Image 1 (cartoon, rainbow, N blue to C red):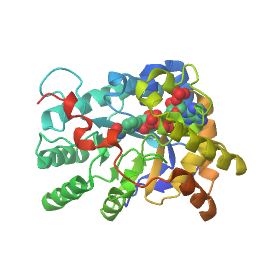
Image 2: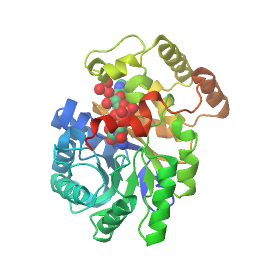
Image 3: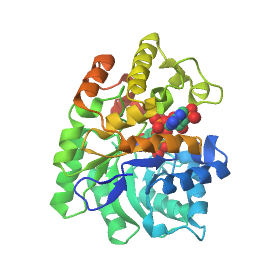
Length: 333
Ligand SMILES: NC(=O)c1ccc[n+]([C@@H]2O[C@H](COP(=O)([O-])OP(=O)(O)OC[C@H]3O[C@@H](n4cnc5c(N)ncnc54)[C@H](OP(=O)(O)O)[C@@H]3O)[C@@H](O)[C@H]2O)c1
């Protein structure tokens, strides 16, 4: 495993790190989730990403149970959580206002059974709270030791520039990391966000690096029973003939390199020095064992060109991922 600095901060995380969305406290038995964390740690992963909203606190609880084990050294693990999404019907129980952030982090720390997290992500931009209010409250959290660093998730380039300007103006800690979706099919950050965030000293911990499983090749011959694609219509819909044709060509490239499609997809992400880590999801320990090997794969320029020839896609906002429309219909103003 190789480790990368998170932007210009001194924090170092494994370039492949473990995500807990849908799986922890959700589709996976707790026992298997624990096996996944142990496998991740044994393979050099030091960063576990979570959120208040994952399984409505369930993911954090599973991590907390693991952290409570005697053999676990909390100080060796980097843990993140996130705040934004509504957790009840209460009018203040969502977003990036002071009240919600203060109560959300208390719940997070309680479920994790720790007195601090390492990175606190603002899970989306909040158009109803002054950005300065958010910067001030997160700065308070850092100064009180409840979180060591903070980050943003799915923010636009302009929002990242604004938040850094405010932090500079008031002498507050700026976010050190952005967490966007990024994979061979979703490359919108290459347009502008990657350059802007890097100039601001931010790193990237990217989510859905394998397009939720599409890029593992598991759907190349149909939808396996029990897979994420068998559960979620939105993923099924993405299995168009065009996408399948691309997946099959990517499988050929992977085979010619004697690696798996997952390893190809992850090594393709890690080709960019702006990336601090790809957050891999896993529904069984074997996924982690296979995926961490991507850390040993370096794709040369010929292979990268071959991949571009297959993808034939330009970085653009995916229809389903325009941040402004991404959640507005779900939030009550
Ligand atoms: N900030 C945000 O808004 C946001 C949003 C989404 C995710 N995230 C974070 O990013 C993490 C990763 O996202 P993701 O789960 O979508 O990532 P992903 O790595 O693209 O997809 C993970 C899923 O693909 C399948 N898979 C992975 N490796 C495999 C392998 N080697 N062989 C076969 N199947 C394999 C598994 O699904 P099945 O076995 O169930 O089919 C697994 O759960 C999340 O856990 C979360 O921490 C953040």
